[in-house]
Length: 171
Ligand SMILES: [Fe+2]
Image (cartoon, protein in one colour):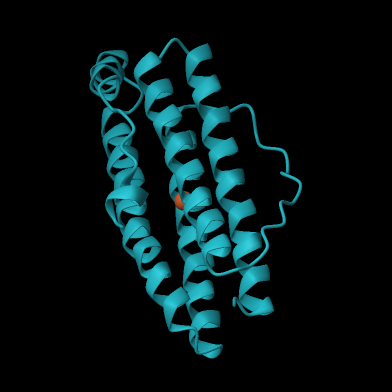
C-alpha cells in the first residue's frame, strides 16, 4: 500500500507532467504558426513523451493500490518572442522538473519507500536526457543567431523525430 504522503506527492507530479505536456503542445502550435513544421513536430513528440511520463506515474499509483486524483491543469503561455526564447524556457522548465523529481526521491528516502525510489530512478536518468536535448538545441539556435537558412536546416532535421515510448521499454 502506498503511503499517503507519497501518494499525494506523485499525484502532484502527475499534474506537473500533464502541465509539461500542455506547455509543449502550446509551443508546437506556436511553431505551426511560424511555418516551422519540423519544430512543431519535435514539440508534439515532446508532448507525447510528457503524457507517457504522467501515465507511468498513473499506472504506478494503481499498481501499489493507491488512488490517482487528477487536479486542474493551469494555463500555459501561447506566444514567444523567438526560437531562442522557446528553447530557453524549455531548458529552464526541464531543470525545474529535475528539481521536482529530486524532491520526490528525497520524500521516498525519508519514507523508506525503496520501491518508489527505484521507480523514480528512471525519471532521474530521463531528466539528464531532457536537459541535454533542450540545451543542445538552444546552443545550436544561439550559434545560428536567427539566420533563416540555419533555422530551416534544423527544422528539416526535426521533422524526422518520432515518438518512442521509453516508459514501456524500461519495464
Ligand atoms: Fe517529464
